[in-house]
Image (cartoon, rainbow, N blue to C red; front, side):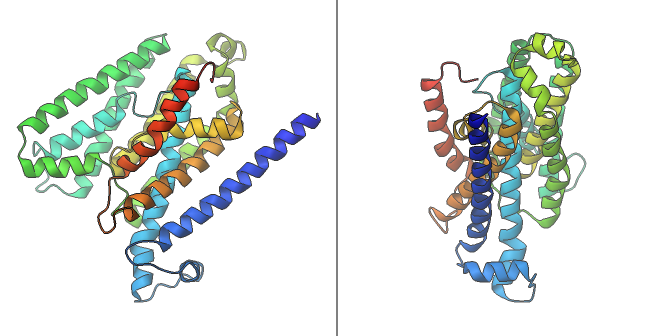
Length: 342
């Protein structure tokens, strides 16, 4: 009983610390940049909703505030998607893009940028690229969902997802090889991922779709815990396995597709952050891991985005490069140490 109280106190303390860290990363992300703005001024402008003609006010409201919110929401969404899929596949090196979602989005953007396929529109606009990426991710997700209703083996579903991803990547490689150099440059920049250029309208779309799905992932934490102990145990608890598979794949796929569409592929957040949450909370209880992973995903992605902006300023680095530097060592360490981590 006493041990349980100590654990609960520790978990609550960690959550309070993470909330504080999220607030700090949010403020410094808005404060730091090519034009430095004091933290006091940032707090004043946001809390008093000052929106005059000042340069700092314009930088905060039009550029850094929406970008920071996008990075936090994006990281939280990718991390939660990664955790759901790791539990679903009972495999610690699975990420949100293992089912080919990222490859599907990349293929459709490649068709737009590299092949000039504009779906009847006169010009290639950012809206068209976002729409194409989302369409590609959703099409691949639909294929995976169709397959998930037909096959019983989770490993088979994982392999099929990987194969779909390889097929999409193969077509994208062909398009890249045949495209003009200028188009290849634009496509490569998109494929590296970036939170720059987010508008309030885009943040609103991400929030309107992403936040309900994050809440939904929290509400399925109990069946997820049962799923961790095996499908037979989950069935004995009254869980409809087919329906539950559909729910997990749908939530994780839409979260990953949503962020990829607006940001481009962002590597390792979905794979590495759930492991950090497990190490930090020292539990596999999804009632703790899901909110913990969401908070950590937002914090780490916001700090990676800040690093991408500041490391070689004024040159901005691709956020995927920073997240890869951060995530790859963690995954390697986890693979070396893992025995029965799940």
